[in-house]
Every structure is written in C-alpha cells, then in structure tokens.
Amino acid sequence: MVPMKQRIRWLALHGFVRGLSSFAARRGDPQARLIADPQVRENPAAFADEMRSRGPLIRGRAALMTFDHQVANEVLRSDDFRVSSLGGNLPAPMQWVMRKTDPGLLHPIEPPSLLSIEPPDHTRCRKLVSSVFTTRAVAALRERVQQTADELLDEIDDQTGVVDVVQKYCAQLPVAVISDILGVPDKDRSRVLHFGELGAPSLDIGLSWKQYLQVHDGIAGFNAWLAEHIRRLRRNPGDDLMSQLIVASDDGAQLSERELQATAGLVLAAGFETTVNLLGNGIRMLLDTPQHLETLSARPQLWPSTVEEILRLDSPVQMTARTAGCDVEIAGHHIAAGDMVALLLGGANRDPRVFTDPGNFDITRANARDHLAFASGVHACLGAALARIEGATALRALFETFPDLRLTAPPQRRGLVNLHGFQRLPAQLGSRQATTAGLPA
Ligand code: HEM
Image 1 (cartoon, rainbow, N blue to C red):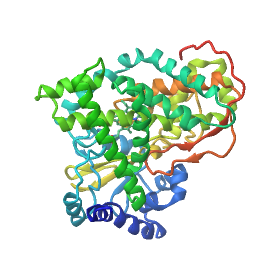
Image 2 (tube, protein in one colour):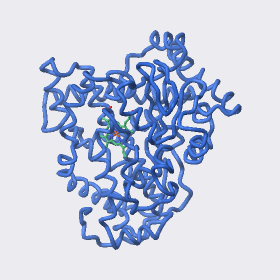
Image 3 (cartoon, rainbow, N blue to C red):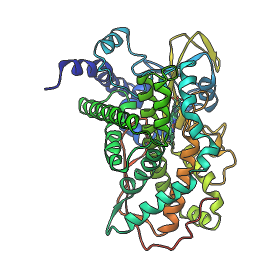
Image 4 (cartoon, rainbow, N blue to C red):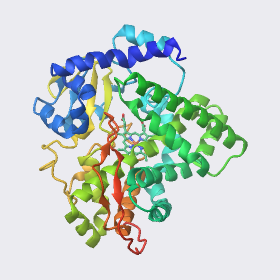
C-alpha cells in the first residue's frame, strides 16, 4: 500500500498545482498553459512567440516568465538571483507540508544537487568535477565517442526491419560515454537508463499521481544503485571521476557523503538524460531538411555549427528558474525579493532581436552559439563541451553510415514540459555505406 505521506506530498507539490493549472490555463494564464496545455508542450516555439510579443517579462499566477534572450541572460548572470528549488514558489502551507513529508531522497533540483546550491558550496563541489569536462579534457574523449558510435551502429545494422533510433542509438551513446567517465560497469547501464527514464519528469511540476509514483520509484532506485556503486568503488577504486570524488569525500573536508552522492548522481543523470534529446531532435530536423544533409556530406566541417543550430532551435532543456534574492529592476520591471522568474531558454533561443529569421534552420548561422540552451552564469552546463562533441560525432556517424535513413512513422514526443525530445523515432536504416570512420573536423 502506498503510504499516506506520499499522497499528501503529491497533493502539496503537484496535485494542487495540477488542479489549479488546468482551470487557470483555460482562462489564459501563461504559466498554467505551460504546465497544463498539451499544445504548448507539443509546440513550445509557437507559445514562446505569442508570449514574447507581450513584453520581456510576463506575470503569471505564481511567477514571472521571460522568453526574452537579454533578460534571461541577465537573470542567469546576476548575483541578485538565486537558484530555485522544487516547489520553491508554492504557498507557505504547501512548503510546510513538503518539509514534513520529505522522503529524504536525493533529487536533481533539491540541495545539495549542484543545480540547487550557491557559492561557496557550489564553487567547492563544482570544482571537484569541472576539470574532467573542460573543452581540452573533453577533446581527448573524441575518439572514444566515435568508437562508441561505431559500435552502436554495428549493433543496429544487425537488426532487421524497423529500428527505434532513439532507444537503440540516441539513448545509448551518452550513457555509455558518461558511464566510462564515472566508472559505471557495462552491465549496470541498462538499469541506470531505466531509472533515468522513470525519473525524467522530475524536472516538471503538476505531475499526475501515476507520474509522481513513477518518478519516486526512479529516483529511489537510482539512489540505492548509486550508494551501492559508491560502496563498490570505495572497496575497489578505479581510474575514474567517481573514484576521485570518493577520495575527496573520504578526506572529509572537501565533500560530505551526501554531496558526493548528489554531485556524482547529477553528473551521471544529466550526462545522458539531455543529450538523448539533442540527438533525437537533430535527427528529426535533418531528415526534414535533406538539403542540409547534402551540404554536410560535402562540408563535414559544418557539423559543429549544425549542432549549435539544433540546440538553439529545438532546445533539449526548455527552461530553468531563478528567485530574486533582493528587490531588483530588470528590463524596466520591478522584481521583489522572493519573486521567482521562469526562464524559457527554448523561447529565448528564438528571440528575433538576437537571431535573424529565428525559425529558420540555418546550419551556417554565424551567431548560433549565442543560444542559451546550456544556460549561462555560474550554473551554466558543466557538460556542454561533452554534449557538443557527442552531438557532432553521433549525428555525423549515423548519417554517413546510413545516408538513406527514413522515418517509418510519425515520431513521438516524450510529453514532458522541460526535457524536450522524442520518445521514439521508428526508422528504416537503408543500405550501409562504408565510412572512413573520420572524426568530425
Ligand atoms: C545537449 C545536452 C545538454 C543540455 C541541453 C544541457 C543543459 C543544461 C542546462 C540548461 C543547465 C543549467 C540549468 C540551470 O542553470 O538551472 C545544465 C546544468 C548542468 N549540466 Fe547540462 N546539459 C546537457 C548535457 C550535459 C552533460 C553531457 C552533462 C555531463 C557532464 C551535463 C551536466 C550538467 C551539470 C552537472 C549541470 C549543473 C551545473 C551547475 O549547476 O553548476 N549536462 N545543463
């Protein structure tokens, strides 16, 4: 039987918001539409264009929202704003209920996750992992990423009929790469992927009871698996980042046990739950524009800028949020201390004041890299360099190996608000081309 405590927690965190949002969405409240309107989930770009035309900052029932590139960037970089935690803008009684019903699990957007802590703790924890993900350190992984892509393509080539490219390729490549970095054994990968799939809606609010239970199971399973993995590496350390973090935590001063689990868990989960969407979104966009595939075949040096344009136009992480730490003025609007601002990164990435003809997929766009798909400021994505290499390598390898790849049915979106990608891309691979296994330029 499900404990009553869980029901109460769901009601406070999601049930209440869910009920209110479906009512408020019908009356046009922008924040409620984001949560409860399936059309907005399916086509966030159209919603962003509509909202941006109302001004740089829009007031919703529970928070401010921005779809404006300059405002989003300013908030992300400002010392006047703090990261927001799960349910941080709920009314005080709901927050009290949440504290009383806290199951004690590590959650990606609750402290001590990197995403939810501030300097000096944030600086201390991030420093312990950042050296592995610098552009230079990640460049050394390029060959390993290429090899993983080639192995996966060999595996799918052996399958006959329709292949789901998301499950068999896009999801597998990032988890294999980040597992190598964190010393996760091959045999554990499918379990880790399964927990990630269950936990993916954890970044959304207004979940149904069924989704909430699924997320709870995913996070609980992941927490238990991670604790066991850390115990194993403590007994038998390897040459991986997780083993280094364990050493840092064992000396006591650098990282507590809970910080160790939260930091390692976030790096692992963020390492595959996001890039899968970049790859799936990219495949879909490129199949829709065969002229770009032709250009890329002749000019493979355009793969990195193509990845930037995919990140901009169909951003895998659609939003984040910050809370004002003091009264502050942004874009002529007064924001009071404690006000939350939802930053719609995907919308900001289509701001016509920054990107000319923003809806156009232009793989040679000079300023595509100015997108905010990896956010900016002190919490900017730690894995951006890795994601970029994975994107360029995996997409190039797929389209060079199977140039006749075709979708066999309409692709299905994941149906989440924040993590924006495809659940399934059923495809016919077509005949295989011998490639030079060249690394992206
Ligand atoms: C296309 C792929 C990816 C996208 C779109 C993406 C997006 C983001 C965004 C938007 C943030 C900032 C969230 C915020 O400020 O609230 C972030 C943070 C983060 N990302 Fe990524 N990410 C991707 C891949 C990765 C990978 C491969 C890793 C693995 C190392 C990773 C690890 C992290 C971590 C640890 C943070 C927290 C950083 C901090 O708070 O200091 N991400 N990511």
